[in-house]
Amino acid sequence: MKDTYRANAAGPWCAAIAISAVLCGSATATESGGSIYPNGAENFLVGAMPPAGFYPLVYATSYHATELRDDRGNDIAAAIGGFRADVTGIIPRFIWVTGQQLFGGQLAVHAIVPLLNVDVRVGANHQRNTGIGDLNLSAALGYHVSPNLHYVVALETNAPTGRYERNDVANIGRNYWNIEPLVAVSYIQASGLNADIKLMYDYNFRNKDTDYKSGQELHADYAFGWGLNNGFVAGVSGYVYRQITDDKVAGQTVTGNRGRAVAIGPSVRYQNAQGWMITAKYEREYDVRNRPSGGAFWIKTLIPL
Image 1 (cartoon, rainbow, N blue to C red):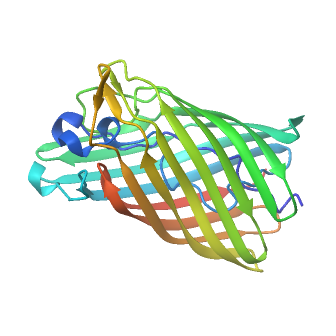
Image 2 (cartoon, rainbow, N blue to C red; image 1 turned 180 degrees about the vertical axis):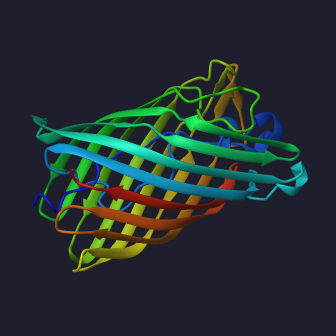
């Protein structure tokens, strides 16, 4: 049982593309067209909390976009003189699954400290920033319904610790607090169907430097695969994203700029009997509104101590 559950305590980090709202105008849902949570980050085993212990994980990602979609889904990059966004990151995550039980579940806490490089070009404006992004802290409860079915409930808090300048086109931090309740469910088989979903709700607080309050967001990461009975699971993963309330500037509602997107791509996971795990995937975005549109590579590793 111990080796079966080595994976996640379910949680995001603050890796986001920050694009100047002045330059991009109405084509940016939420402030600067980004989100605190990096959609598509999680996949297989997201809802399976491991046994009590300390678990360091490392994520690596590379996101590239050259399209900027408006409210009708049209690419307006050419109209603003060109657009490109590249985000790369190495993101360590530290999970402590305690020996405590609370409300019938395993209690766990985690911290994520993203190390990011953000490179953005909008028209003639080009900027690159590198540094530590926004800190993520979480408390979670894990439940094991059966040897195959597991789920996690958690509350994330994202703190505005990353560098932010209101006139920059490439910011590492979002400059506002965020809370994110979530539930993640995993169905696991060594041979046969594997299915995972992580459903999240984001409440964003006001950016005090711009008096901008991004709308609330509902989104889910998902993965479907087939266990090959040799440690490998192969399939697809991605995300579904919807902004469900309007933004506000100085207390006034901003209409017609809610974001949405879906993504899908191939994904593969390998896990050995000792609990070492690696996941690799590529996800391409579709049906995008009021946000950049591109694709991302992800690698996630867990080396048990």
